[in-house]
Image (cartoon, rainbow, N blue to C red; front, side, top):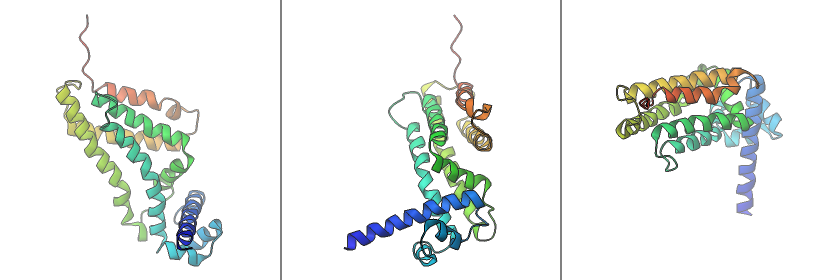
Length: 209
Protein backbone atom coordinates (compact mmCIF):
# COMPACT_ATOMS: atom_id res chain seq x y z
CA UNK A 1 0.00 0.00 0.00
CA UNK A 2 2.83 2.40 0.89
CA UNK A 3 4.60 1.65 -2.39
CA UNK A 4 1.40 2.23 -4.33
CA UNK A 5 0.89 5.55 -2.54
CA UNK A 6 4.41 6.65 -3.49
CA UNK A 7 3.87 5.61 -7.09
CA UNK A 8 0.58 7.50 -7.20
CA UNK A 9 2.23 10.58 -5.73
CA UNK A 10 5.04 10.47 -8.28
CA UNK A 11 2.53 9.99 -11.08
CA UNK A 12 0.61 13.03 -9.89
CA UNK A 13 3.82 15.05 -9.63
CA UNK A 14 4.79 14.22 -13.22
CA UNK A 15 1.24 15.00 -14.34
CA UNK A 16 1.50 18.44 -12.76
CA UNK A 17 4.90 19.10 -14.38
CA UNK A 18 3.52 18.13 -17.79
CA UNK A 19 0.52 20.42 -17.31
CA UNK A 20 2.79 23.24 -16.19
CA UNK A 21 4.96 22.91 -19.29
CA UNK A 22 1.96 23.08 -21.58
CA UNK A 23 0.41 25.99 -19.69
CA UNK A 24 3.68 27.94 -19.45
CA UNK A 25 4.15 27.44 -23.19
CA UNK A 26 0.63 28.50 -24.07
CA UNK A 27 0.16 31.41 -21.65
CA UNK A 28 3.65 32.45 -20.62
CA UNK A 29 5.08 31.98 -17.16
CA UNK A 30 3.97 35.32 -15.71
CA UNK A 31 0.34 34.72 -16.75
CA UNK A 32 0.25 31.19 -15.40
CA UNK A 33 -1.04 30.65 -11.89
CA UNK A 34 -0.78 27.45 -9.92
CA UNK A 35 -4.57 27.34 -10.00
CA UNK A 36 -4.42 27.30 -13.79
CA UNK A 37 -1.86 24.50 -13.71
CA UNK A 38 -4.04 22.51 -11.32
CA UNK A 39 -6.99 22.83 -13.69
CA UNK A 40 -4.87 21.71 -16.65
CA UNK A 41 -3.55 18.75 -14.68
CA UNK A 42 -6.99 17.75 -13.45
CA UNK A 43 -5.94 17.93 -9.79
CA UNK A 44 -6.78 20.19 -6.87
CA UNK A 45 -4.80 23.31 -6.06
CA UNK A 46 -3.82 21.63 -2.81
CA UNK A 47 -2.23 18.77 -4.73
CA UNK A 48 -0.03 21.24 -6.63
CA UNK A 49 1.04 22.98 -3.41
CA UNK A 50 1.73 19.63 -1.77
CA UNK A 51 4.34 18.86 -4.43
CA UNK A 52 5.63 22.39 -5.15
CA UNK A 53 6.07 25.29 -2.77
CA UNK A 54 5.54 27.94 -5.44
CA UNK A 55 5.63 28.59 -9.18
CA UNK A 56 9.41 28.93 -9.22
CA UNK A 57 9.78 25.45 -7.72
CA UNK A 58 7.46 24.07 -10.39
CA UNK A 59 9.42 25.90 -13.09
CA UNK A 60 12.66 24.33 -11.83
CA UNK A 61 11.10 20.86 -11.83
CA UNK A 62 9.98 21.33 -15.43
CA UNK A 63 13.46 22.56 -16.36
CA UNK A 64 15.12 19.64 -14.57
CA UNK A 65 13.40 17.20 -16.91
CA UNK A 66 15.08 18.88 -19.88
CA UNK A 67 18.62 18.70 -18.50
CA UNK A 68 18.95 15.05 -19.53
CA UNK A 69 19.35 16.32 -23.10
CA UNK A 70 22.35 18.38 -22.03
CA UNK A 71 23.82 15.47 -20.08
CA UNK A 72 23.65 13.20 -23.12
CA UNK A 73 25.12 15.90 -25.37
CA UNK A 74 27.95 16.44 -22.89
CA UNK A 75 28.67 12.72 -22.90
CA UNK A 76 29.92 13.02 -26.48
CA UNK A 77 32.67 15.42 -25.39
CA UNK A 78 34.53 12.90 -23.28
CA UNK A 79 33.28 9.58 -24.60
CA UNK A 80 35.47 6.94 -26.17
CA UNK A 81 33.59 6.90 -29.49
CA UNK A 82 35.86 9.48 -31.13
CA UNK A 83 39.58 9.91 -30.78
CA UNK A 84 39.37 13.44 -32.15
CA UNK A 85 38.10 16.03 -29.62
CA UNK A 86 36.94 18.30 -32.44
CA UNK A 87 34.80 15.48 -33.82
CA UNK A 88 33.40 15.01 -30.32
CA UNK A 89 32.53 18.70 -30.02
CA UNK A 90 30.75 18.62 -33.38
CA UNK A 91 28.84 15.44 -32.46
CA UNK A 92 27.76 16.98 -29.16
CA UNK A 93 26.32 20.06 -30.86
CA UNK A 94 24.62 18.06 -33.59
CA UNK A 95 23.08 15.69 -31.06
CA UNK A 96 21.61 18.59 -29.09
CA UNK A 97 19.89 20.10 -32.14
CA UNK A 98 18.69 16.74 -33.43
CA UNK A 99 17.10 16.06 -30.05
CA UNK A 100 15.40 19.44 -30.12
CA UNK A 101 13.99 18.51 -33.52
CA UNK A 102 12.60 15.15 -32.39
CA UNK A 103 11.58 15.84 -28.77
CA UNK A 104 8.69 18.34 -28.56
CA UNK A 105 8.70 18.39 -24.75
CA UNK A 106 12.37 19.40 -24.57
CA UNK A 107 11.92 21.97 -27.32
CA UNK A 108 8.90 23.54 -25.60
CA UNK A 109 10.82 23.71 -22.31
CA UNK A 110 13.63 25.67 -23.95
CA UNK A 111 11.14 27.91 -25.74
CA UNK A 112 9.60 28.70 -22.36
CA UNK A 113 12.97 29.52 -20.80
CA UNK A 114 14.03 31.64 -23.79
CA UNK A 115 10.87 33.46 -24.84
CA UNK A 116 8.04 32.94 -22.37
CA UNK A 117 9.57 33.78 -19.01
CA UNK A 118 10.34 37.19 -17.53
CA UNK A 119 13.13 36.86 -14.99
CA UNK A 120 11.77 39.42 -12.53
CA UNK A 121 10.14 39.36 -9.09
CA UNK A 122 10.14 35.78 -7.79
CA UNK A 123 12.08 34.70 -10.89
CA UNK A 124 14.84 37.29 -10.56
CA UNK A 125 17.16 34.76 -8.92
CA UNK A 126 16.25 32.01 -11.38
CA UNK A 127 18.22 33.39 -14.33
CA UNK A 128 21.61 32.49 -12.88
CA UNK A 129 20.53 28.89 -12.42
CA UNK A 130 19.04 28.78 -15.92
CA UNK A 131 22.37 29.94 -17.34
CA UNK A 132 24.40 27.46 -15.29
CA UNK A 133 24.46 24.70 -17.98
CA UNK A 134 26.03 27.17 -20.43
CA UNK A 135 28.75 28.03 -17.94
CA UNK A 136 29.43 24.35 -17.35
CA UNK A 137 29.36 23.61 -21.08
CA UNK A 138 31.95 26.34 -21.65
CA UNK A 139 34.27 24.74 -19.10
CA UNK A 140 33.86 21.34 -20.76
CA UNK A 141 34.53 22.83 -24.18
CA UNK A 142 37.72 24.43 -22.85
CA UNK A 143 38.94 21.00 -21.75
CA UNK A 144 38.02 19.46 -25.11
CA UNK A 145 39.81 22.22 -27.02
CA UNK A 146 42.87 21.79 -24.79
CA UNK A 147 42.88 18.10 -25.70
CA UNK A 148 42.51 18.95 -29.39
CA UNK A 149 45.48 21.31 -29.14
CA UNK A 150 47.58 18.70 -27.34
CA UNK A 151 46.76 16.08 -29.98
CA UNK A 152 47.70 18.45 -32.78
CA UNK A 153 44.31 18.49 -34.50
CA UNK A 154 43.52 22.15 -33.70
CA UNK A 155 45.33 25.13 -35.15
CA UNK A 156 48.20 25.92 -32.73
CA UNK A 157 47.59 29.69 -32.70
CA UNK A 158 44.11 29.25 -31.25
CA UNK A 159 43.46 29.65 -27.52
CA UNK A 160 41.20 26.94 -25.98
CA UNK A 161 39.54 29.39 -23.58
CA UNK A 162 38.72 31.81 -26.38
CA UNK A 163 37.48 29.02 -28.62
CA UNK A 164 35.20 27.69 -25.87
CA UNK A 165 33.68 31.15 -25.31
CA UNK A 166 33.23 31.56 -29.05
CA UNK A 167 31.53 28.16 -29.37
CA UNK A 168 29.13 28.84 -26.49
CA UNK A 169 28.21 32.18 -28.07
CA UNK A 170 27.76 30.45 -31.43
CA UNK A 171 25.50 27.72 -30.02
CA UNK A 172 23.37 30.14 -27.99
CA UNK A 173 22.86 32.47 -30.95
CA UNK A 174 22.18 29.61 -33.32
CA UNK A 175 19.75 28.02 -30.88
CA UNK A 176 17.79 31.24 -30.33
CA UNK A 177 17.42 31.67 -34.09
CA UNK A 178 16.55 27.99 -34.43
CA UNK A 179 13.82 28.27 -31.80
CA UNK A 180 12.40 31.41 -33.38
CA UNK A 181 12.27 29.87 -36.86
CA UNK A 182 9.89 27.38 -38.42
CA UNK A 183 10.58 23.93 -39.91
CA UNK A 184 11.78 24.23 -43.47
CA UNK A 185 13.66 27.49 -42.95
CA UNK A 186 17.43 27.77 -43.34
CA UNK A 187 17.92 27.97 -39.58
CA UNK A 188 16.41 24.52 -39.27
CA UNK A 189 17.67 22.92 -42.49
CA UNK A 190 21.25 24.18 -42.40
CA UNK A 191 22.02 23.94 -38.70
CA UNK A 192 24.26 20.88 -39.02
CA UNK A 193 26.18 22.43 -41.91
CA UNK A 194 26.75 25.57 -39.82
CA UNK A 195 28.02 23.46 -36.92
CA UNK A 196 30.36 21.56 -39.24
CA UNK A 197 31.76 24.84 -40.60
CA UNK A 198 32.16 26.28 -37.11
CA UNK A 199 34.27 23.35 -35.95
CA UNK A 200 36.15 23.02 -39.25
CA UNK A 201 37.53 26.54 -38.85
CA UNK A 202 39.45 25.29 -35.82
CA UNK A 203 41.07 22.34 -37.56
CA UNK A 204 44.59 22.24 -38.91
CA UNK A 205 44.31 22.43 -42.69
CA UNK A 206 46.11 19.47 -44.30
CA UNK A 207 49.08 20.60 -46.44
CA UNK A 208 48.43 20.74 -50.14
CA UNK A 209 49.99 17.96 -52.22
